[in-house]
Length: 164
Image (cartoon, rainbow, N blue to C red; front, side):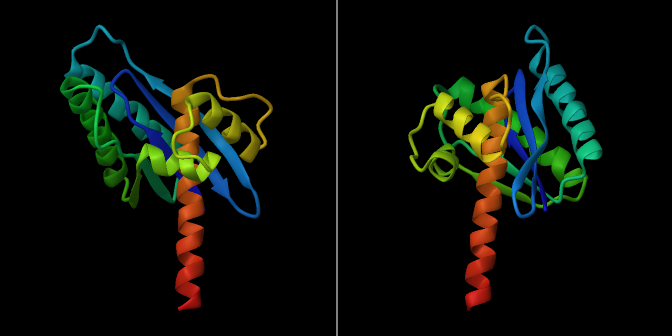
């Protein structure tokens, strides 16, 4: 199973592709970055194009997106919602199933503590994926964490359904 994790943002959108076999393996990760001086409509189009390329190149089976309920303010919440919509659209256009996880769910799954800071998440992602270094950006490590969370949750759901 190959999962694309996405950490939505309107200037930097983190992505991480994780292969789940006996072990977890990072296939690709990074940040789709767009020019902050561009109007929001142009940034969203550029994010869509970048994410579509990543989906095409990495061929994920499923997509997991970080889903925030609240933002620091209304403007931030709106922007994150727009970026999340771009991620949803790019995924749906490729026929991929989408799953959503809150930041607390992701942190709890990856670090065993739902209020971990970004550095703790980054370090645990490095350990769980056996990376030589931590990912350069928090956006990329958060996206990898979303993918790891989805893999763990889907494995658990399959285990439960097999028991019933």
